[in-house]
Length: 227
Image 1 (cartoon, rainbow, N blue to C red):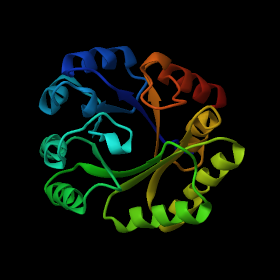
Image 2 (image 1 turned 30 degrees about the horizontal axis):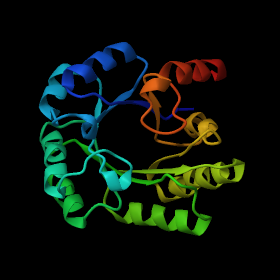
Image 3 (image 1 turned 90 degrees about the vertical axis):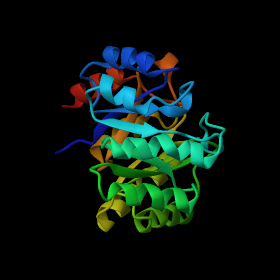
Image 4 (image 1 turned 180 degrees about the vertical axis):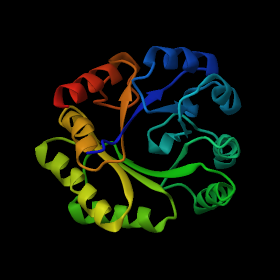
């Protein structure tokens, strides 16, 4: 059985700080997510020159739980640069302007970069019918991979979210799906074994970029115990 990928989210003030975090991660991650919204100024090219792992660039706006508060044009510019540099992945929110999505997808026609279209709910986990509709929007978006992350307040929330993996598989669509919060921790591991494309971990609990994130070392230990 092929497990999903483990991505470690890195948030630093500049490329040098991110590179130091990456050094601490070592070989424990399959993918490194660079949170451009955490930087004083986006250093896309410098990150690419310093890091050798497959990279995922995210410039998360404040309206989706991130730190970027500038214009959409300013936000998308470093992501377009990442596409030109042929990084592995670029993350764009499902709620983002359609023009942003089209510009990135058009640029990807001449690049090996794949788009992750993401959707987050930091308050709770919607009803099953709403989650299915979000998944269908992602499938129709033209993006290569979906990412749906919700806040879990109990086991039923986790089960409802993870059920999307079955629907995505039936549609032939790659999906990363798990839950935030204490109740959602188990889903960050379980999704690896249920067809999830990728789960997200942090360097350590102090560096967590989302509630309930597990450190990459601890996640790797759990995977080893189940092997």
